[in-house]
Amino acid sequence: MTEQEFDEFCASLKATSNVIQWGNSSVWKVGGKIFAICSIWGAGNHSKISFKCSDLSYQILIEQDGIIPAPYLARAKWVQLEHPDAMTDEDLKTYIKTAHEIVSKKLTKKMQKELGLVG
Image (tube, rainbow, N blue to C red; front, side):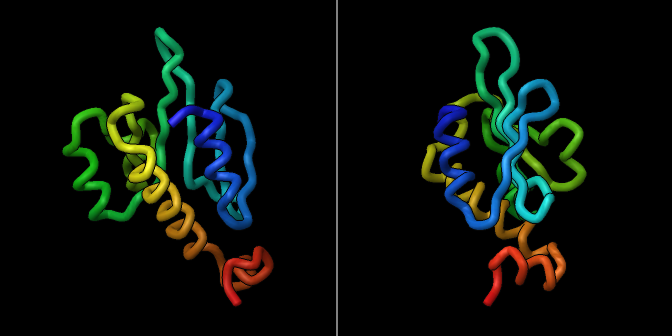
């Protein structure tokens, strides 16, 4: 998934906002809370995508080739794809959507309602 595809997908999720921070990283938030990040690092300017995941997904994913605990965020159950081919685009979209849901559910009920995340 390219950075542009990443941004387009994250923008399609409900009540999201995007900021560029931490050395040109594309940071996606819902209710002011981060759920996914795309950074460009190293030789070849490869994108590295990080996202929040469930405890079980975290344990499974960090055992996969090309996926590591996300630097600075691992304690909060975040993973980082080291290589663009570490996961299919479809699987990545599913995990990003789940990250959005995990973070959305941790917002206050009032905030969820204001953002149109609940009925």
